[in-house]
Image (cartoon, rainbow, N blue to C red; front, side, top):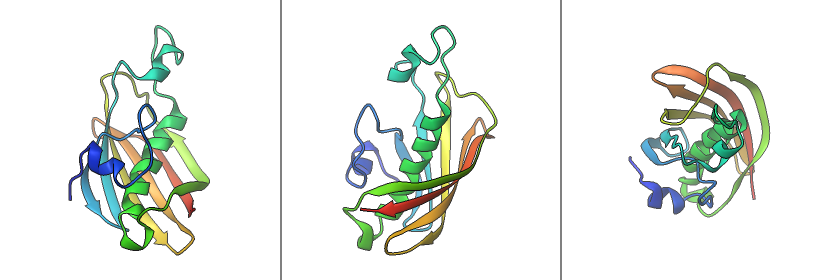
Amino acid sequence: MKLDKDAIKDIIPHREPFLLIDEVTELEPGRKVVAIKRVSEDEYYFKGHFPGNPVMPGVLQVEALAQAGAVCVLSLPEHRGKIAYFGAIDRVKFRGMVTPGDELRLEVELLSVRARGGKGKAEAFKDGKLVCSCELTFMFA
């Protein structure tokens, strides 16, 4: 299943400038999602991070992964309309720089989903190379 930005906005509450995924290319609700973030030179955070050497902050890479994971879990009928919040972020590793013009492939596999939250394994790739990975724990509200 593929989703454009409007379809993504129907599932998660994030909006510009904080909506950090542009499209979903694969979706198995409650199991797995693959999403794309096209990193534009016009991103608001590049003005200060870092002038003359723009780099996408690692925390925003993790947020993009979390938003992709939220699309996956909130696509389930029983969780539709809820909000997924961070419960924990574990084993975060950054392995490369993300700069203007890059395209991130965001892959999240949900390891467990329960009534009150769940866990997922998340990885971001640039040009086929792993640049960020983590484990995400989320809770619903």
